[in-house]
Length: 169
View 1 (cartoon, rainbow, N blue to C red):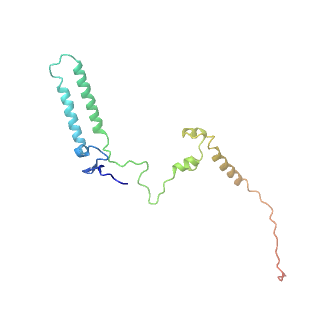
View 2: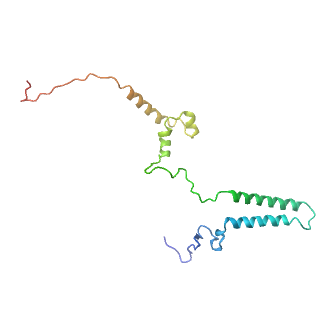
View 3: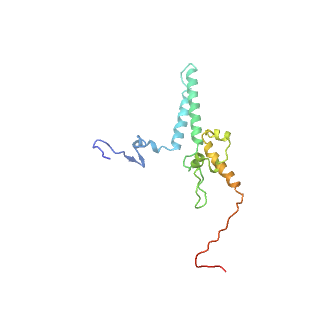
């Protein structure tokens, strides 16, 4: 891919690219949780301190307290949320060596494995129209009944072949 002379390559500042965060060169990406908490609680205190002044109506007081409470709630949620550095996966990593995860998408599309014996209500819960997958269920049951009914024994005809020059005594 050709680059033009007037195109700038994204710069990387402290491991953060301007392609990902346009303001990376200003250092905002490095602001930690402690700095956010400190700035937020200082803002709450300033909003509460504005109540002590020369205003006569209560509209200002209502606005200042409401904003202070909203910021405080946001800071509490921010402080109690997970640190977002844990690994989050659908399946656990503590599987035995050589473990092969099932192909659940294939099983669901072909109605095999765990999806083999679903009734109509369960199929509809998975947004699968039972009429569209009836052909997947019918041959399987027909094969199963066919193999179980083949217990009839047929008489076997034994034919003895004698080659020329060989005589049996």
